[in-house]
View (cartoon, one colour):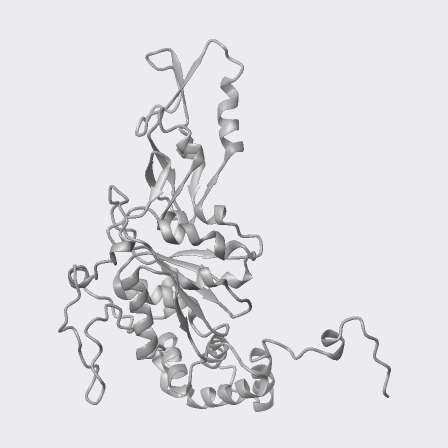
Length: 388
């Protein structure tokens, strides 16, 4: 598959044509699968992976995409930013997206998945307790021990694993043994582990708010980013007895077969990593990512954002946007979803009553996100005299 050099096209008269090498256009308009497959770029030689056999395409986008994008996705990216997204696709590298809260960093993953028809987005929210293992897989050792416990005290019975696809979950086999639940029943792939399953086209994985994670988590991901595979020791130890195991995935109700205890990708996943800029990342981590900074949306972009979620009354929010921009300057920054909250209240009739009440309500909705530190916070441990 290769990129069509003649793919450049103009949006409207007076608008520059899009570069012909772009696959992702930033519009959110779904591309035809046949056209996508024809133009999908080949990976660099150093980013070719050999996972297989190739699995069927994932399910279509879920309801979360509609919540994130609205009925008509807003066009918040400029030409330079769209080029960075396409560079990440071409190079098979994670996309590190930075910016203030609420500028649309997480929504970018859903926009890419919708436009390129890559199926349901896998989301891995990061917290201070998140570990690499949680993103890869979970093994329910206690559940497996409980499933085996009824047979531990029957010495006359011999155990054997139930083959995949065998509907006889219990009872004696022809050899006089007892079929136990296979180990794969107790293994659940996480979002990252599911994204690394072998698919013809990459899965979209959103690693949300990486800067909230443990200090070592970004560096723990380096080998995964380079190798595109990981081992499940619980399965690898049994590979001679059971070379294949069917495990659960992060897709609702999904399962996949893991061979020899190794999950290896065929197409490296399209990973979108978001950060609010609250921490620095190591040079080794940054070297493996394409970097994209999304600034605060301007008035035009805010208008398209409202139009995406309130298409029936998009033209009636100019005054609201102007007030939002004024308030944003006063408090040192607001999130775009705070504007959407106000637009929803306008649609509900909250602005039709007393003007003073509406102003107070707007101040409560458009509250300051990062309050200025007090003197006691800026100088902890110091006592300040009462100057009254």
